[in-house]
Length: 235
Image 1 (tube, rainbow, N blue to C red):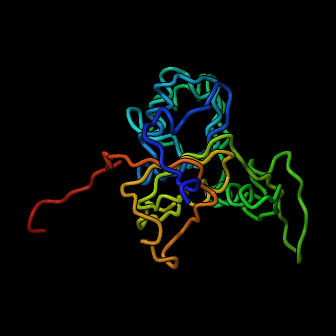
Image 2: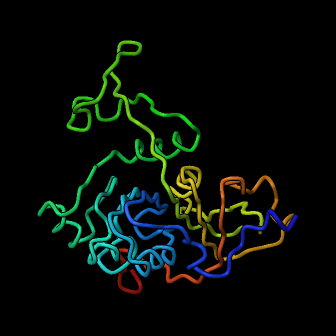
Image 3: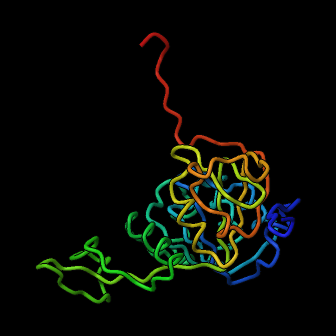
């Protein structure tokens, strides 16, 4: 059973094999459920020309946003990009290629890629710039556009708990894009808050089976809040 143990002991080992010009699929939504330490390791490695697929690009000093100052990202496929001033600057100046994708479509692109489905039709984006250059067909009298699925050289994922075989449990909204991302990487690397022995997780609680996971590491996390909203005491 030792051969099924996915645990690695360093972030350098976790991201071994990452080189320039690769495609990375990252889980997370805003700053919730992001693989923050794996992102830091990508920054440390200094790889350039990367294509990033993620719901967003973090903020200027946290999440995927930390890869922008050194021009490590050459293209990003994302659905929301409104919290990062450097991202905006690079996009508007033409330094960064951006492919804006509806959020549900992006999730399905990851899921379909992981399932071995090369493309699918969706009504989302019909009649908008999203549909430009894409095949359009009618089904039951409604128009749909063809969207290609996505796979990556690496997928980086944040989970709450895992066993040593890589079976994953996500916690509440931190689940977000992570399960889909986990299926779509040639190499899937997961960082978690807790690692338990095989058999300790209830099979009915597992969200992503370990067959999708190549490497697993336990980390510590800042869990930064993207926009903190408070109100005076007593209200």
